[in-house]
Length: 355
Ligand SMILES: Nc1ncnc2c1ncn2[C@@H]1O[C@H](COP(=O)(O)OP(=O)(O)OP(=O)(O)O)[C@@H](O)[C@H]1O
Image (cartoon, rainbow, N blue to C red; front, side, top):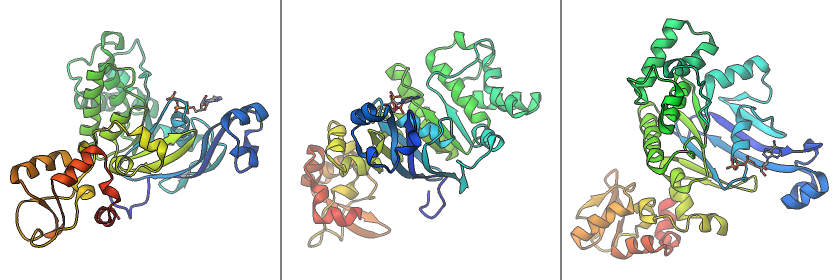
C-alpha cells in the first residue's frame, strides 16, 4: 500500500439526511442542531454528516461505531444503494453520483460487491448455484460460472458441500457462501455490512481469520462495517470511528488506541489491551550513551506485547532499529507505561517517532 496511489473511493463532504426537504439541511444553520432538535423542527434525521475520507487501494478500511451512528448509511451511499443528499463520491476517479442506471449496475455487480449480514442466499439453490448467482446475473456462461464458483467454494473452505442447500448449513458456513458469491465476481472492492454479527463468537473469530487470510492472499480492497471494537482492531488497516453521523477519528488501530482524538474515542478504547495494539515505535525513548550501539534489536513494527519478552530476557533496554539505524530504545518502564495506559506517547521521543 502506497500513499501515492490514487484512492479507490474518495468521499468528500458527504451528507445523508432522511426526511422531508432533506436537501435543505446540509450546510444550513439547522445542520448544527442536535439530532433531537432537528427531528422536532424539521422531521429530518441526519444519518451521515459532512464526512470525508479515502479508501486506499489494498487496505481493509473499517467503519466502526455504535448502533445508529450512521455506518450502514455511509457504506450504502458509496454505491448509491442509498442516495446521498449532498457531497462527492468517486471510485477510481469516476464520479459515482453522476453515474446513470447502467453504470451503477456495473458498479454494484463488478466493481464493489456487498456481503450482507443476512447472507441473502437463495434457499432453493445449492451452494454452488448460490455462489454462481452473481456471475449468472452478469451473463457469464454456465460452464464458466460453475468452474469459477467451484474455485471460490474451495477458497472459502466449503469443498464437499457444493450440493447442499443453505438450510443444511450452519450460520458460519452460510456466511462463507455469501463471501464466496461476492468473491466470484472478482470485484475491485468488497463491502461488508456487519457480516459476522449474527454468528457465535468462535465462528465469528474463524470468519475474521478467513477475511484476514483472503486479504493477505489477494490484497483486495475491503470496506468493513462493524460495531465491535476488537473486530475493528483485528481487521482494520485503518478505522473510521463514527458518532452521530460524523467521523470522529480516522486512523490506524495504533493511532486510535494510542492517540485518541477526544474523550469519546478515549472512552471507546479504554479496555483495549494496549500492548497488543501499540508498537515499540510508540513506546520507545531516545537512546542515551552507548545504548544505540549494541545489543538485540527489534523492528519498529514489533508489538509491545512481543517486546516485553525481549526486554525481560535481556534485562535492559532493547534497540529499535530500522534500515540499520537505531530509532530509539524500549525498556521496562516504557513498556509498563504502555500497558498501564500512561501517556508515553505524549513524550517528546514518541512525538518525534510517530510524526
Ligand atoms: N430510511 C431511513 N429513514 C429515516 N431514518 C433512517 C433511515 N435509515 C437510517 N435512519 C437513521 O439514520 C441513523 C443512522 O442509521 P444507520 O443504520 O446508518 O446506523 P448504523 O450505525 O449502521 O446502525 P446499526 O449498527 O444499528 O446498523 C439512525 O438514526 C437511523 O435511525
